[in-house]
Length: 346
Image (cartoon, rainbow, N blue to C red; front, side, top):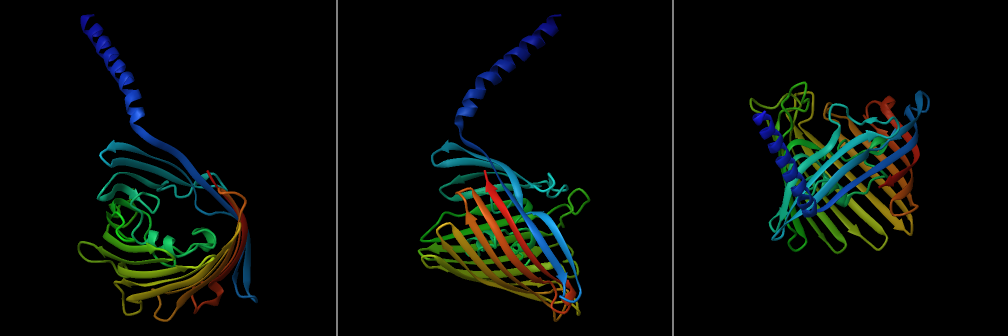
């Protein structure tokens, strides 16, 4: 009985200590935020030629997400931060990727020397993404980098979302900043289906006045050598010049692969475009091209026109036209899509 009473007394003391500490812990938190986006369009897609084609009408989610993030002031200019963001399909209510439901999940520190983050990282974390953040700073999307109009990771291979990562973002010096990320992209198992190559990405950026520019580099390594046609390395560079209402931009690069005699060693890609904003309206035009790695002669060509109408700071109506010539040697693979929809941020 004495032993039981001692245990009860210890449990009571422990609970009291936790309850007493909780207000101090909560008070130390500077901010906690629940946020998200819902993006839906109704699309009409035609695949093939005018003479021989198939049509599809669908409601399409365009990277909807729900997230939690916050920061704590640690004093002396130091702060801790965290984030957890899940992707979901707003048209069906399901997870965007059942195998990897969270788009990011990270914890980190920010101080006078910059920011450091650990976890599953993407451009939404405070260290950004060395390559993808460069793309989003220079290129305008028409109107979402998802669904039919996706270009960031497909056409430009900007390697945004990576697991088992360490990310760093420097302070800004005279308009310049630098981002770096090292990661082992998975254990190459059923539970972690991402491949097990070790990777390193680096981006140097400049933003001052009407000019934004960036140059990026990336390299993969695998013990025992890269697999056949596996990504090896890349570089990219981009420039934006902003007039009063008009942005003009261009970005291009080259991806290198461990190729064979029938596939490309070097895959070149580029995008040129313009975005015009006036009052609550925004019009974006992009023209893109990327070599097809699996072919020595084929290229992928993509043109897109997007329109956004801001009903408020958080709600906009969207419309777009996208033509995607997936393989220039196979006209039956050309996809033309028209879509209208809505985006709401909360």
